[in-house]
Length: 230
Image (cartoon, rainbow, N blue to C red; front, side, top):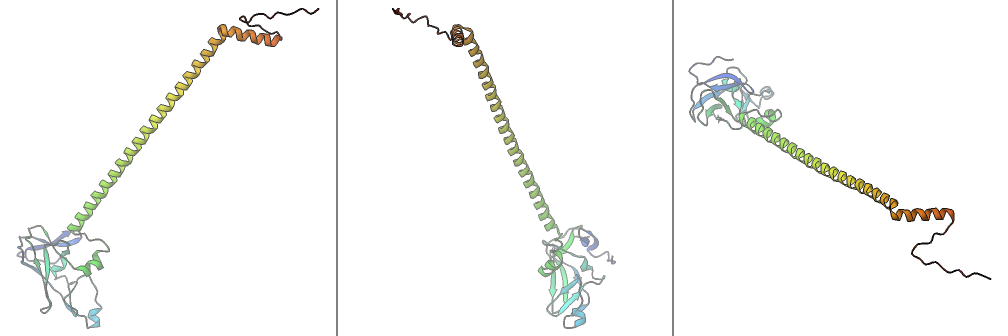
């Protein structure tokens, strides 16, 4: 890490994305924090135009600052979608200064918005890790977790209703089966009583007469007179 004077209001330290720049003293809104500097690249020169790295700061269509040099402390400032600082670009002077856009307390990480082009090229493919985006992801994870729990509870409730419905249907079927068995037993008893009573005797005598070929005359019917033939 580069040496930083103790009278500077910042230090380089560990951040969520690697190294970052942190305030060591209160920094007021609008105050200059640090200059973003490095060799100037001329896009009209093939050698300069061929240079590629993550620390190129474009001033205009021609001039770009190559901020990859270690002396450029501002290179340690990370991107944030909701930053506490901004880049104050002065193309004519070919200078870039990082200024606070809100009061920054000691211990807070200093950050600014890198811009749409940088975001699409470097941050979007891997996912932005700034606090604002982390909070969004955390919120989405919490919402997804809550939705999964809701669906699980709904499925369990549905399964419980189905089980209760099946249990009631089974209980109803068992009742019907018991009633049918009871009716069958009562019918068998009733048939046994008929055969063992008076009607049972009449039926039995008829069955015996039918087997022997003798006609049985009912008691209530009068006897027929038979005329003797001469």
